[in-house]
Structures are given as structure tokens and as C-alpha cells.
Image (cartoon, rainbow, N blue to C red; front, side, top):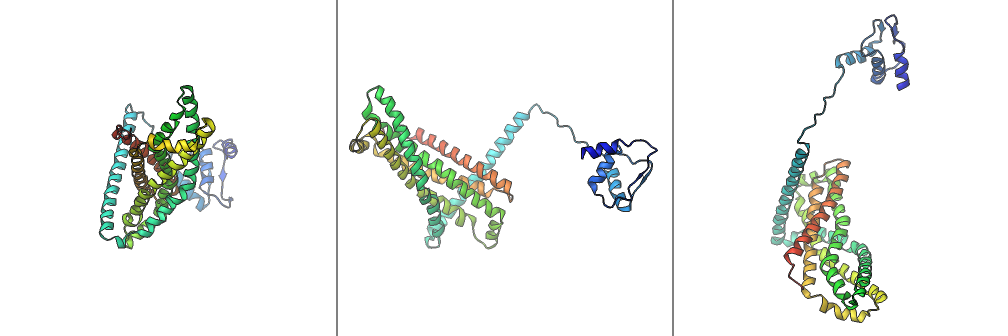
Length: 338
């Protein structure tokens, strides 16, 4: 393209006669090449076919478009911060509306449980809970082994080998188990929920449901929230068990602590309140993941770019919300279970 333009520009002078009538076909790109080579003005001697005349008349009337210069505002950072705050409050308002809709749908479900979305709830429990047993067991076991191994090395220096059970049990049951399970579920099931709702938006299935009088909240949102609220505590218990098993194996290999001693010491080292806090975290984390994932899934626009961006934002936001909720639990229950 550049070679052709340079060759055309080499022909200069008013004495030249341009005859394009013998050109069989010409599109707007070819006309633009000639127009640029002529310096955006019609030569003095030019012969054109009728269909070619339309291209050059359009180029003459259009003229040269000059893009406006972008002005650098002194308050650019302030404006960006303001837009970010507005977007944050917009998301918060949408999330509050979604929570209100879930509350109303829950009351409808309680009043008439026989007409509730039982199939949708059981299907979501299967996908979000049962199918996540493998990955949570693998990661939980490895975390238990690594945490026990590193803790044993430090406790050995102070002669506190027997306190490994206290450290391992309290940290896994109260903090690591619920948090680890929630992060895995947010990355696995949260992205799946957002993508599912996003695809339904792209394929206009959500609009079809509204036309048929089917409520999005009652048939799509509520089953996912209830399913994760049920499945997450069970996954927390499962992850705690496997992580403690990994820690027990590592303690046997590193400190020669017998499994019998580990199992006998664990109930004394970890009060019952910590188990209840861990299970309560599972319920809250599950509902947070479902609400955030559904919120971003319903906001996806009918195009593939929005689908990918919304899924990524959903996972990051869900994990952030889980960590913030865990910090709130740590502050509120700071004096409980010790």
C-alpha cells in the first residue's frame, strides 16, 4: 500500500492528464489512494467513469477530519477516583436490590414449599458441592502437610513439639479450612454461575423467561444461594478433615507424633466454639459467593467480551468479599473459642 502511494505521488505536475475510465473496478480504498496522492485536490485534467465520480465527490465533500486534541485535566486522578466510587456504589445498590429480591423469594418459598425450586437446588448442590470434593481434598491435604511441616520445624527449636496439634487444629478449623474452601468454590462454582447467567443473557434466554412469566430470582438466583449456603459448610467440614489428615501424616513423619495422640489431643486443643465458627463462616461465605456471582452474571451485556470481563471480575470480587467477611469474623469473635 505504501509503495503504491509513493509511486502515485511521484507523478506531479499540472501538465499530466489522468484518465481512469479504463479501470474496470474501483472501491473507496483505491479512490482514497488516488486522492491522497493528488494532495486531496482534484487534478486539472481528470477523466472518470460515472461510478468513479461518486467516490471522488464523496471525498471532496467529506474533507479532512481532524481529531480534537485531548486536553490533560489537572483533576484526572480525582475524576477517575470519582468514577470508581460511582461504579462501586452502583454495584452496591445492585447487590442490595438482589439481596432484597432473594429475601422476598425466600418468603415465597417458605409459604409454599411444595412449589419451590427443589430440582434446581439439588442440581446446584451437586455441581457446587459434590463435584468440588476432589479439588478441595487435594488442596486441603497439601496445605495440611505444608503447614504442619513448617510449624514442626519452628516448634522443634523451642521444644514445643506437642503443641503442633494446638497450632494445626486451631488454624485449620477456624481459619484456613473455611477460607480455603471458599476461595476454591469462588474460583470454580462462582465463575460457573456468572458464565451461566451471562450466556443466558447473550442467548436471550433471560428475556424469554420474563416473557413466559418465570421469575429470574425464584428459579435462578434463589436456588444458587440456598445450594451454596448448604454445600459450603459441608465442604468446610470435608476440607478441615482432609487438611488435618495431611497435618497428622506430616506430624508423624517430622515429629514422630502418633495418630492416636493427635486424635486424643485435638478435642482438648480446639474448643467446640471454633467448629461452630468455621461452619458459620461456610454458610456466610457460600451466600456471599452466590450473590456476587449472580450479581455480575445478570449485569453481563449480550456480547462475548462482556462475558469474559464479567466472569473475571466476579471471581476477583467474590474472593475479596470472602476475605473481608473473614476479617469481620475475626474481629467479632476475637474472644470466642480460646
